[in-house]
Every structure is written in structure tokens, then in C-alpha cells.
Image (cartoon, helix red, strand yellow):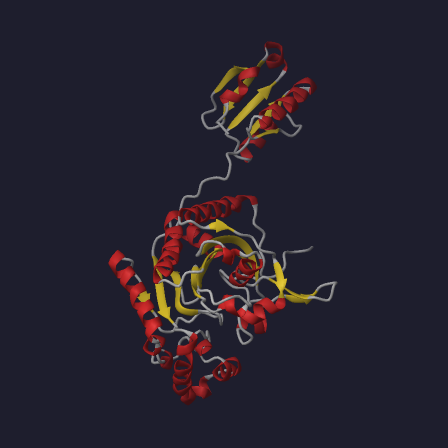
Length: 416
């Protein structure tokens, strides 16, 4: 028997209310902050991600689903959303619009990762990007959007974690300081981390294998190596957060796992989660548009994992509304009543009501069916009802029954 591929999950009907709820609340939070939706293709030219995410990142080295299509083009299932949005920003001339351009997306992503709790090979993200403004006020806006979205969902106990990794010009001195720090500990580094030591020492701070090592806490801090502009930007952002009373925690080991990040980086963690439990993560990427061939253009964004958000909603037992009310069931006795039931279901659906005709069983079995699917109301048709031009309406919660004129049945049901 076939099963879903490892690292993927079916979203069953009983789970859909969580997905619809998160999508609706996230979109409303984005619209409130002036963001408009964008959708990009599920696959892109492989070079887009190699160029922006970074050749030495785990995503490019180990996790991308890349293949050659029938036309001989190397394409990759989208592992993250920012690069694709920036490609669309340039391709469609959005840089000619009023800046910044504020965009959001709700999309599936794909990474060949080791499946574990909250981590899938096909996963879904809500993301937001503000492209074209270098000011710290936009960093604040992005952080507020992420926190507001989680708050609107009804989640509590979320901690904002911050760092500033500086500009490209600040990086060489900091990288050299990291190498000097980690050089005495090379014996503790596995093959992947030794490669990172040579190619991208910042990745060592993000290493899962080194997370428990004491020397990680003593690593040089990027905020001690900021240039004048990055330092002023950082002080302005922290000043906004302090003035508004936004709680946060500084973490000098927070660097994010993609090469395009600059200056502000942040994550949001549930208080009861572990080191790999972030539900939102993002930061500034002021050099990314230029990497793609555009003029120097600042940007900042974040992405939130829908699966992790839903896991936290379930853990915190947040009440989530049904997508739609359960349908009314039309039960019947006899062939003539069945034909009338089919016609009534057609009319009710045309009027926006959810309605299904019961399976062809005894009336008692039809009532059991209605109960099993959670129908709030059963509409009963039989010879007596047909003769009088009425429908018997049964409230399944109270077991009360009443007769309603056939023409007025729609008014006896909940409004669609």
C-alpha cells in the first residue's frame, strides 16, 4: 500500500480549520500593516538559490530538491521564499513603484531535511518582505508584524530573540576573530563544521553539533564589530523596542543560516520550546537585490512555519473556529421523498447552505449517519411531509422537531 513520502503529511479534513484559521489571521495581520500578497512559482532556476542563499549553506549543499527538466534546465523546488520574491521584484519592475514595496506570501517550501517534530521535507510558510527602505523603523515594523500575527492567533509565551551581524564591510574582521576563537577547538569539530571553519565561520555559531559546547558562549560578538552605520541602525532599532516596551532577548550566536542576511536578524521562540523551535525567523538582506543584478536596494523579511504555528496552537489549546458549519442532512422515506430530497439539497446549496442527502438506508440509519458527521440539523421528508408540502426539521442537539413549509426551509437553517 502506498504511503505519503517521508517528511510529508496529508492535511486531513479535520485539520483544515487550523490551516484556514492561520492563513486568514496571517493575511489580515499583513493587510493591516499595508502588505499585499504575491505568489511565485513552486520551482525556480537553481542558480537563483545558489547565488543568494549561499553555496556553502546546508540548504544548497544538502537540502535542495534540484533536477533537470525535459528542456535541460536545472530547476529547484523552492526551499525558501525571499530569493523568489526578490527575483519577481526585479523581473516585474516593482523597483519602479513607491518604495518600500510590502509583500507577503503563503506557500509550500521543500528541503531534503531529516524529518522530526516540527520539521518536514514539504512545509509551509507565511512570509513578509519589505523591499526598498533601509531605516530601522522598517525593521521594527517587520518584527511587530511577526509578533502581531502570533498574538492575533491567540498564542502566548513567545520570546523575540535579536542580533545584528553587521554589513559586508564589517564582516572580515569579525570572521577573523571567529576563526581565532574556534581554532583551538578544531578537535571538537566534525567534518561539516571543519568545512565551515574554512569557508564560512559564521555557520559555526548556528551549528547543531556544537550547541552544547561551553566555548560557544565565549565566541566573539558580532555587535562588537559593527561599523558606524550598522551600529547607529542597531541602536535606533533597540531604542524603538525599549521605548515601546517590546520584550526581547539578545543572542550573539543568532546568525541565521543563509548568506544574504545583513544587520538585523531575529527569531521568535515559544517559551517552552528548544533551540530548534523557532516559529518565525528573518532579518535584513541589504545586498540581495544587487546580487541578482539590480541596483543596491535594502530589504528585510521574515518567514513563519505554518506547521510549527499549528503545533503551538494545539499545545496551547487555542480555540479555532470551524471553516464552515457542518452540513444539514436531508433524510427521506421512499422513492418519491428521495427525489424531493435531491431537489431540496440542490436548492439549499444554490442559496449558500451546506446540505447533503443521506445515504439510502433506513430512516433510523440515516439519523445515525447525520449524528456521526456532526450535522446540526436533519431535514426529514416522507409521504406525509410531501402530502402537506412541509419538511420536518430536527435539531440534533435538542432532539426537538417541527414542521416548516417547504418554501421556508432555508430560513430554518443557520445563515450561510
